[in-house]
Length: 95
Image (cartoon, rainbow, N blue to C red; front, side, top):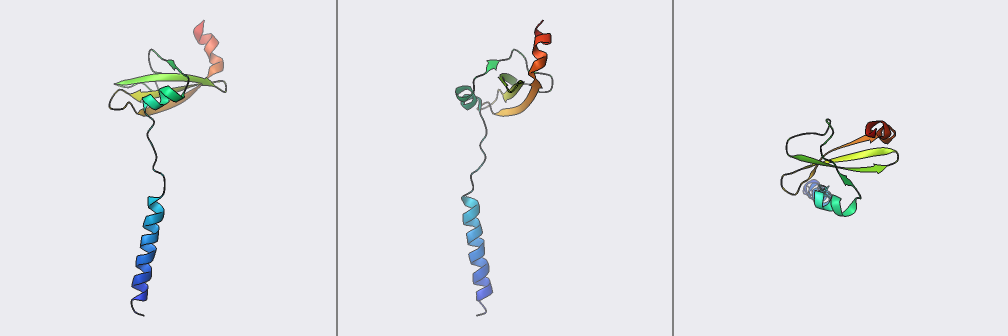
């Protein structure tokens, strides 16, 4: 009986390890996946809030907002930033 607490602890630890191992791991959104899945336009420059060295930006329009995605130029070009802007202000910007 004195091994019961040790055995119980071991079984609980193994069960927790199994449960944690089954949890999905977060994935990084790379540009190749984004490009294939999301209708977008290329931006010549990134908005100031997303600008940075070795970055490029793409934009989508949905729900009266412009959604801008910033990607790194390094590696698989992972997503490194995101921002939304009010699309109702676009006509004033384009005139």
